[in-house]
Length: 545
Image (tube, rainbow, N blue to C red; front, top):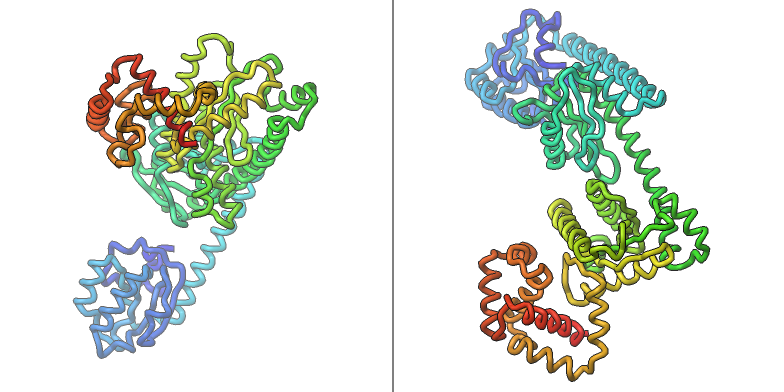
């Protein structure tokens, strides 16, 4: 109940609000009656204190301090019986209460505080009983809707009818999963605004809160789904304060939480079985082609389909584990699950077929291709762009650095294990070069194998002649120049992409490249010179291994 409702009690019909009129919407959860000097230590938030002011009758300053402390403690208000131990409430106390919006009620002399306490408590208990009964009935009604097969759509429609406002159900990725029926359809732009807003919200145990979205009030009710991941029920066009409406939304949130958790448990179990199948397949533990075809069909593998394999790894995963998750295997698995779900979400948005699973600490993707021999370079460039975009978004959203090793094409299902190992080799090759957030294709590995056939002495001579003073320099500036050339080559000699990957200004990239041309005596615009530098940088990696 609110302080304003307390004023309607029969025993307070002659009482008056002495100060803090703007705080009459404070909630009253309990009532206390005490005249001890140290009373503040026994009070709780949302508690109304009734007193005769006997303990502070000789000290108005103590009453001033009591008001300040009660306001700090988020108490509901203070009821003082005057004309017994104090004749009136001091002006300084009333002024402070007005400043703090803290209600002070002047109680008539003929209103017994004991009876008044009992009356308020009885009203609170009666109202609580009504609320609990309503919550139970509402929860049962929502649960019945789910059991009847109407799902969360039925629950959200029923909730919207109860509270007379449209509602949205948001999952832990910030995606709108259910929208209630509404006479005024919600535009896609508005749903995107609310989706983006929910992604930025992180609550700390709040039951619900209100905010503004495009100047429209919205009430947000958090749903702790699992493993500290949060969804929301958003009530549009209202800052809810009616307790029964709030209870209705909370019960819908409880039902939604159970449904989300049930869905997650099923997905987790299915994912584990899927990972076990692909682990056995890639490790060539399944020798029967028929078994591969029959079991793989369930996960989307097609018998006469060519596939490209991509393996993703968490950069510095060993270091991350030792610093953040040592002895916390479950937490590390949750961390990997979060990345898996993120990748799954990003690939789903591409609206292209894919198969995603995990093997050990890597994430593996099988991508169907129409023709493994038709324009492979252009298709690879397209996928590299997609993978770089996913890298950037993942780092921006979750602060996780991820790299990709890209294998060649598997023209039949039995070629997939070999394709996987080549993608894994590409990933490891990138790590051996001490790179991060890279996309490494297997053809680079094939060229490296050819270079290893050349005598070490000849490789070293070519390397020194090509990179000259930068070849074996330990000078920090020279090492920055080598890194800039390497990233510049990886990004097809695009300055803007190089600057983006190195997190420096494009003018800095241009300056470094000009400096390299001066030192090397080569033009970085000459295709032949660029090819020599590409090979020299690859030789540099071989010489260091």
